[in-house]
Amino acid sequence: MKHKTENMKIFAGNSNPSLVKDIALELGCEVGKSEVTRFSDGEINVSIQESVRGSDCFIIQSTSKPVNENLVELLIMIDAIKRASASRITAVIPYFGYARQDRKARPRDPISAKLVSDLITAAGANRILTMELHTLQIQGFFNIPVDHIIAAPLFTSFIKETEGFNPEEFTVLAPDLGSISRARQFATRLSCPLALVDKRRPKANVSEVVNIIGDVRGKKVILVDDIIDTAGTICNAAEAIIEKGGAKEVFVYTTHGVLSGKAVERLKSSPIKKVVFMNTIPIPEEKIIDKFTILNVAPVISEAIKRIHLDTPVSTMILE
Image 1: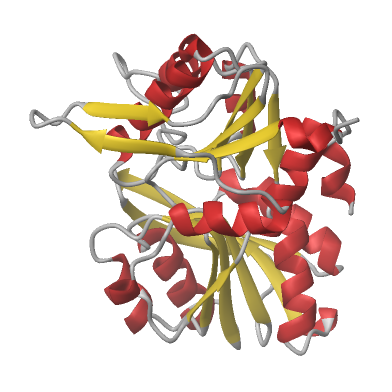
Image 2: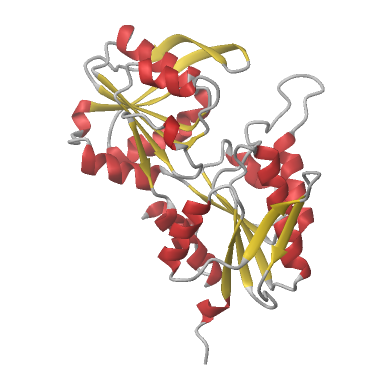
């Protein structure tokens, strides 16, 4: 009699092949045979080169830069595997692009995160596995199950092991109101006080620190966020908590390193001592500086994939 996991297959798009290899290694399986190429006019061509009939398939693809190409790759791979009679398709999206467009901030704005959710469902995905969504309400944009992994357990374990951790010396700080829930999870796990940066955003990708709510004087501050994009928010917050708040040191823990524009230059010249990412998005070698530490998220994602395949709870991972 075959073991149940022998019916599981994982496939990779082009967004993060090194992470997929690590996940396959953790699962003790091979990456499914597939090829994603381009026609001469730029159209995406997907070829699934092994049978998936009756299989429980997992397609691993971050919708990071180039966002639209990676998204369309994912959609076409889902469609190809659905038409090849897979029994179930889980879209594993370590970084969910368009997540910041989750509401109408101005009249006539699109809600692009909802549109992307509809596209993935329409393509034929049966469920979603993702990590550290920008806002939790995006789970409700899908009409299929969504398993959402948070980064706090992995990050806080790393902090306790590497920062010479003493909870009395540290304060966890949220760089904006949207990050307060995420920062509270860190503070609870670390038994540290919590602080908040009160900021305003006069225009897109520009932020100004108005006030610091909470005491950070003389403390080692752990700044927590889900994404570093242009790094303006994080760097402004770090400067403010040292210059205005009197913090001793600043460490940044963020799940997704988008690092667009002048982000690397800003982080390099900022007072931040260390920036810790996860490898949900591949960071090119030329962008990696001495301040960066990249944690491998493959063990966490592979554990979630196992649990989905075996129909056991994923939610309990948050408590472990």
